[in-house]
Image (cartoon, rainbow, N blue to C red; front, side):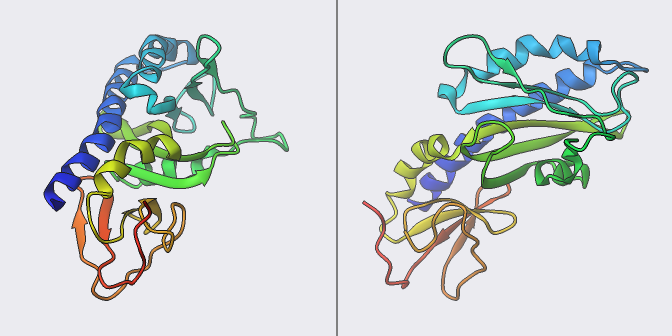
Length: 230
């Protein structure tokens, strides 16, 4: 049973990471010796198409450039969001370091994780005030060119959509069960004791199971006395 649950969760997350590897490779190919914003326009058909795949699991997707990468834009992100009413919408933020509204994306976990060398990063859940005001996860992978860090390929996934994809498998476990990311933040759960977004710091007697090579862990709350959610 546990093996089937692990496989189901792994498949769900890995679908998103597979898309991000496509974006990573396309971004690396688009970056020339002296890249400019215009070079990243070639990414748009891929980004737009992937917003509609995986049963609409991905709500936002794009490439975030390392500061100084682009000759004509020291700070830049090529980021697109789904738009139920029409074609995807580009996220535009103030990227002027001299502005009081400057958006310094290098402090976010979805950027610092890949920059530090993590091959797969899962951030959240958190309320995404930057893009959608939705409770979200951000999955990210590093983009490198010639061995040097060039930026991040990332995707936003609404928690409600991720829950819909993984909870049926989690609920086949008779004990309370939940997923945590590498930082111990709960990503999905069948128990009200550890709701999505809360921090799990470990508990004696709770078996854990790695989710393949992903930065996620399945925790089984045996003996907790907390009923699973119906």
